[in-house]
Image: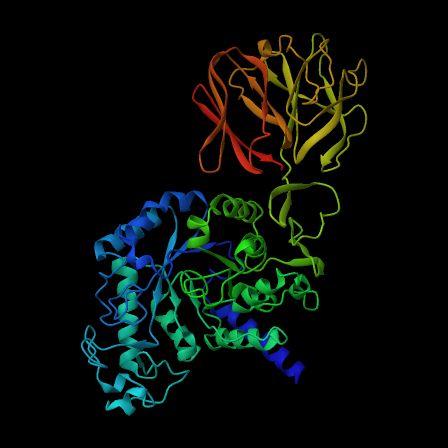
Length: 602
């Protein structure tokens, strides 16, 4: 029986991969749920609040924002929809809604509407539907309205019954066409890009696929929330996978299985996060269709039906923002709990390393006090009080907090050696132990290229650091040298050019810069613990401003400001009082701006 289920599951995936919207496969998107259960009561108007945050969300690299139900409803939260085309609600006016969406679009962010189409209430009573107008044929035959004097005359329900409103007959072509017309109006007139389908337990997933076909959304995700037995997680995720399959793979689904297992795991049951070497949630079976999350307006917020353990929320985000699936961040955690910077750092790691909805997981540890994994061989992470760090070279701690840490491998850049001989015809560069490429030349090396004004240069691509010697095609030669930054060396002025042992002066280095040569900015060490150093090469005299700020734009220290002579300069700074995390050094020099990322360790 297991083999039969597996073959069916594989076949369904193969079919779906050719049928669904392209925005699911290897998606790098990160979503924000842009409201909570009481957002409708905000005195400033909720759409105005979200609009005011658009720039911050763009800077944080969010790709999608999910807004609350847009239509007039019998309840202020919007989940008992009444007149579908009336989108002036407790969250704001139609104009405020379109302004909010435009502001998010200006940041490159797609906007999802919360689509409540399982059920509907009447304008003045149980089922006098207006705007659009429907008759009894729009209500399923087995709706409870019939036992209360009503006359539902549609077909039988294709899903679970919802007792607070009339369950709609999705088999009816008029209902289908009217819903598609309304959704296209939301898309083309109001500006929405996709859908979050509410309570998809109430009707067959086939119809979600049908509505996707009729509206061509950017992205859709369904809410199928059912009880989870932690001792039988496969049955739970199979139910979600079956619904995705009913949509023919055209919609993603919220990964309630991952949420449930993860919030149990952080209570010293981290072993639950490994089932047969894979993830226990929907991300372990169909990751491209899994939207992972920690909490939402139902599970958290003021309802708190199934909240994640409050003091361990960042462990949850360290997991979902490094693992496959499409992660969704909750507004409350991001803006109200003071976790914005910590979550931003995790999003930056995900984006910098191109982690996506189908990234691979290599689980390294899963025991009572620790879960650790490497993702795509690019990112390593651990959650839990147990001690762990990735093995091998090149790992750099990017962010950490209470019982979580995330590492990645700093990407290799290009390293350029500049040399100005006094009498040699063509200098040669010999290098070895180039890191991380491991490149080594045969003696006497490679000829350097003239760049003007007596200077020669050679660039080692994909190299961060290297040993090297310059020579006159073998003899005479310089001493052995080492650098992790672009080096400028003149014959006779030899030194071991490391950033921690750079010369206190730069004898005539600036005097030989070629016309048009660019300034440079570098840091050592990086990551930084307690104290760091910024080093500059300026090709000419000029006005300089040099500062360091955090990701929220707050200036941590002003390094230098004013007129600065050409040549080599270095500035030390202290990070003892700074929170661990990511910072940016910004250098404004003449008409140029250089920025580099600094990693500060605890």
